[in-house]
Image (cartoon, rainbow, N blue to C red; front, side):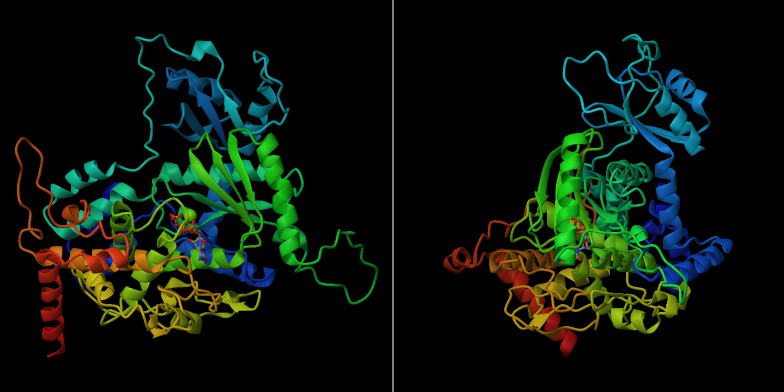
Length: 575
Ligand code: CTP
Ligand code: MG
């Protein structure tokens, strides 16, 4: 993946370069999102179309998601000793069948993900696994594919090399990233380097699907035909190491909504418990599964059932993987927005690069936070980047309305009255030939939002044009599918002001000669932060906490000259 991304590292070289780059940039997810929100007939058509695509070397979203799920079903997660001998460990496991892939990682101990070539091997391995006998604690006898290696003969003595290498599961610390970026020669290179450092790795992506599969085994005690699918940034192409794992418990395979009544003859029906509403069903299912995860789920800790939220969920930490997990059900619109974001990310390599950069910049300045609150969320920020890219001249990505107009019959999707239809066939989407560099786009993003009329206008990726705000809210971003909802309803004025001030400052910094060119090494071997690296450093305006405080303080010379420079630039543009 790293080597293919270096293709992206080159400066933008026009449309043909973009097409090449798009073909070559390999994401660890490929098209791992897919959807089951279309009726069964449409889904079958999509699968046929996907199979067609596979022939020309491009796999569809649907196919890759199915592949990842199937891969996860053939995998086990094993807690190992830090001195586990890799060779002996693999030899021991391969008595159950061929191992296709394995890797080690560290999360409160050393773990190995082992993917067998056949599912029978997993069954054989589980057959042989023992119930823990050396513990004094009482245990819930729930058997899962999360195991511990206890065989001491596979562990080396302290002075022997164990042989394995741990795959990183956490992001590069910000200071290290700043140093790494400072060594690059152009801002475009800095942006692609940041993307490489932050995006999900192949291994992390596999682990996400494996955790979903382990969770499915628990839910399957009640709903044997269910699936659990990752959604959100785990699969939309914008996730980074450390992002939470959003999971969707899909019961549609069981619900029988698509079964046709025969015109004549008898038909047996299941008797089922009735509830007052879909929401009540969702709440009762999540309540029971949440209890199961809490009491039987190995490695699942801190389980919270948040059933009264707009979208009920079960939140917990999966300790062996280190993922913070949110489990939902009946959340099909979010699956669709995941698929939409994925599609946008695939259309042009600059989309993903810019989203990663803006997300990282926002995190570095505390614009976003892992704690829920009045902060702008990563999802909102991603939609803001997409909107900005739709507003370029010519646009880099199409509007959602245009994607809907290109949709075929198999793409039709209406969920709870919301039109979620958009094209899934990439070849139908014609892009404009915009050749702006990543540096131009990053600077453009900051300028765009430094001067955006937030008080009056709403951000709308369906129309690709700002719309009058339909309701009072400091920041209004229309939900792409549930169009009456504001994605950023939680954001307060202070947080929006801070975002705008930081955009102003970053736009200004990128225009300064001292910032936008490499400045060489400081004392020793440490490079002086420049370009993107200097934007990630603590800000001069970061101290702004609220409007009140800002009003009392005179604007610094730095901010004054920044606003002046932006004003001049805008005047030049309009004259
Ligand atoms: N979502 C949505 N409307 C919202 C919030 C979230 O439709 N107001 C959907 C989006 O598809 C989003 C997913 O739910 O991608 C998961 O939400 P969240 O975890 O908040 O965002 P992520 O995109 O996963 O980003 P992060 O890396 O911060 O988790
Ligand atoms: Mg998420």
